[in-house]
Image (tube, rainbow over all chains, first blue to last red; front, side, top):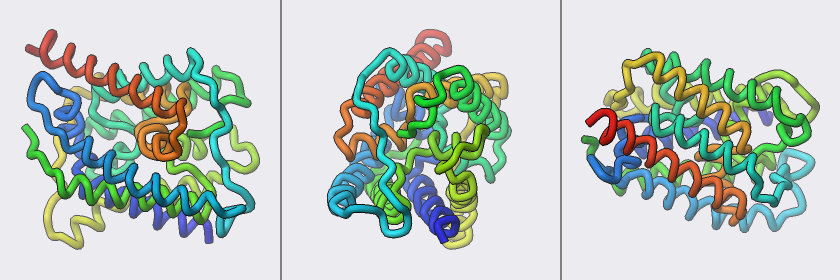
Length: 143
Length: 143
């Protein structure tokens, strides 16, 4: 049941990415290009997503547990350490180079642009490498 | 140039937020795609549910086809044809997201919606390095 639900939620998430234009790396890169061909659309995607999630999380997290799982799995870490900052900085450089982040890369994968086909396996290798060389107990936390 | 699409982006963003709320309500999980992608990679420890992670990614993958089928319109996409650049970008995105415990969805949407200080700092950091990267690539090197 949870497998099917995850499929449907992934589909909904990705339809949102397509409708918002975020599956197109050119739109993401133009958002980041403040000094050039700036396209503010991404800010509207973030605003729409955060408005719904901020409200929805408040309602959902009042409950003791999720409807179909034993417990909420929320990230436990609170410290802003070098690892968080370095990881985010490295992520941003890659995002700025390709205009793709993990969600849209899977959305764009089926459209089979050669650049996306090069990006996704390299991204999975990067995730695997970072998890392998960092402490396992930290790698198990997801954000 | 890409067209500024405030309404479509706001609506698409709302769907992304809704997907995040549903995943929390039903499965108790954060809709962070780099974390979900990490679950389909070894090591497979208990509680990581690789099958439901794979189902979520399959949902991401099929969405553009569903949109094309429903709308009869192609999905616009412009990806860099430079495969070495895209592979490098993918490596940095994957490595950075796993090291920093999150990406645009996990930190940028879910974390900010939970008012997580770690996620707010991570989002500001990757936005800054991504904007800087695009500035260097397009205006200093690319010209």
